[in-house]
Amino acid sequence: QVQLVESGGGVVQVGGSLRLSCTASQNAFRNFVLAWYRQTPGNSGDEREFVATAAMDNYPTYAEFVKGRFTVTRDSAANALVLEMDELEPGDTAVYYCNLFPYIPDVWGQGTQVIVSS
Image (cartoon, rainbow, N blue to C red; front, top):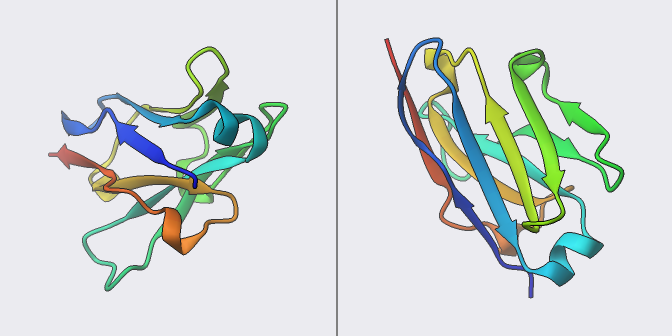
């Protein structure tokens, strides 16, 4: 069973930065591509949008709305997928989740809350 734990969220002002971490078991980290997703306040139900992923060779892919502001990397020493978020905007306010890429519904964890205040 894949277990992922998100951390690093918080409250930040517009233009600020946060660093999110998704920690996985060594087996999960070595065998699966992980990704970040988010659920914004305006989304209903369980809808989550893709944010970023890093392939096994660390090649990143980003949603259009975060390009140039977010950086995703695989940290092999920590078995973690790290999301560096810069130039945060109010629209980035959301609960950020880690899952496989593509996601598996049974893997969703608690997420980590990010609030960008203006």
